[in-house]
Length: 315
Image (cartoon, rainbow, N blue to C red; front, side, top):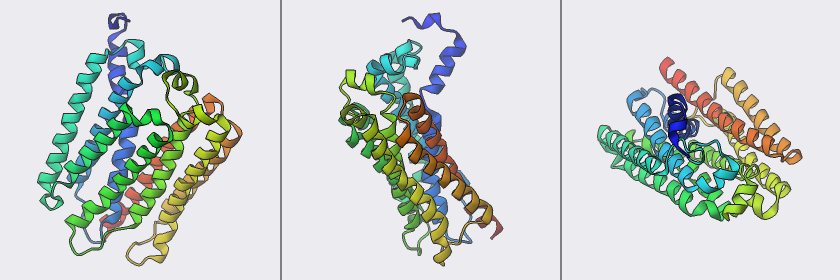
């Protein structure tokens, strides 16, 4: 299909949508969550470093999304023919160049963070390489292995939270390794595995044609919904742990009341989604569920980050 038949606006939108920026924003916010929640009271937030961490993570995620679409272009002809590559709005060759640009941007940003913060000893560069490399390995090989690919995404989510905790631990000497963000990260990783499992429901036909052995392809919608729901309870547990545990830990002050209320509402919404998918596995609802979950993750992380930044600002 010739890209000349599309308007300039359609082409520009394709270059934006292929990045799936919300995914990158959620990933960047996860790393920021680990950093901010680990900060001891009385310490000022380094907003430049925090912004660079979020931007760098978005770059890593963006390159992974581009190479994901390149790897998935055949099944997307069936599952999502409107996407930039199967629709012909972007050529495969151009997409590869576009992806490499974001790889370079991600590495340059990581280097800048480690130069600004020499106490990190290259942690950001190492994390960016491992994070980006594992996502690309997922695109090339692990996705076709079904659940093992889902698990890889979950592990990457945990790694982002862990990066944030280790980042703060290295820069602010004298504090112990902050473990609450890592525990919450493990729960968030579980929730992301659940989301990845549910994502297979709308794509059964195309995945089966492409030989992708998702849980949905192997075991059908009902089993997929049960497994996805079970993993989603990890996210719900993480929200409750992060909201309740600080009440009993002297070094971590509890959330403000407004933040607590929002977290509980988010947990209720996630609970509804975990239960609803058990009763409705139709492609449209499964797609809606995985999209809502992305914003649930983002809202969950932002509540804690904003709460902690306000607390630090007020002293």
